[in-house]
Image (cartoon, rainbow, N blue to C red; front, side):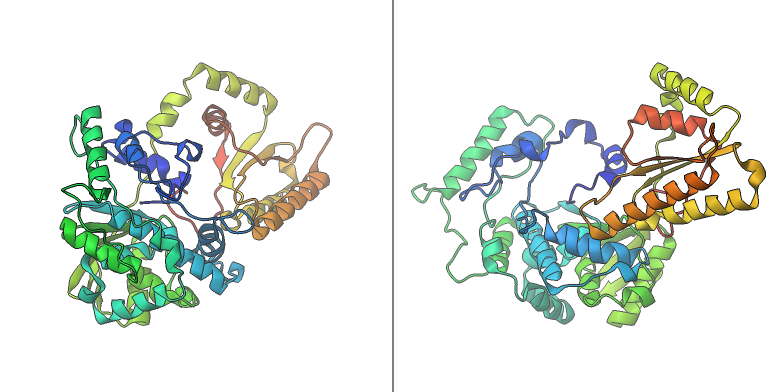
Length: 444
């Protein structure tokens, strides 16, 4: 399960053996939520092999769990920018509610032997919540039961009561034609019809919590043996930085219910294990943790780009045409290129300052070198990012004003996304690619 972060799509897409047969749907293509199906129409699962989870927006039209807690607290903390954190109890509540929504929907869908792969920092409570729903809280260890109470505290049960619905089983076979889908839909309708001879008593007993309902559903369907994996697409900070987080215990315990926890590098995995020792008091080994009678494997799984995409892409006529125009424009100049999202972890202001220092100390390079900085828009509605854009615009204007000549401008700044063909041409043109991220994941 994931929140559909486009940054990790290429790697996940190419790593999936069924990627070519698994269609993607835009949000506007999803069925509109109603009081009866909350947007989770069985036919959508059969046709597209996708299970939507509806998350409510706040008064500003934003998803609080993602914008406020995930991107305003976890993102800066995990990238060693604790000064950018702005912890608020309402952010944490929205994050918990969203993770409970995901857990409740997934628990109603998984079957014995399934593998649930949880993606990134937006859903770090999901493994613990899902494991509790599948196996029952009474089967969890004392530490997890205690933290589960804290995670659920203050969460409005009405938020999750409406999504505890019957979902059809996924299409397991290679055929999976329309007839099979019709049978699955008939099964759903039959079980929901009180007059049907195969109807079973609904688990929606008055007074029961969503967690109790999910436990009953799990037992009915024999959901033992579900394996859960988690992969973090960002760095994991040292324990000294991580312990700044007020809900540090809850986040750690949230992912410790996984069977496998993956990181980009050994350092990130080591930081996580160290945090488990220093904050939770757990004994760890280099490759995992023995936690509440279960072995939790911790590993590193780096991944790179698809180089052949660029090797073949540069041969395209449209790329060659664009490259010819760029070479004529910047002839007799060394070209430095920077391609980054406009994010404070990318070190764009530091890069611009360094280029300014270089031109100041080496004036002989004036009119002989140029910096092309592509800044891809990111989180433009977040105040920290709006301030960053203002800072970068001011720096570019000042440096260009100081060093420009009638025939040469030192910095070409583009605040936009570019198509693959143009990006390939820019990479082919450049003599140097300058990366100045202060901290980052494998998207370097």
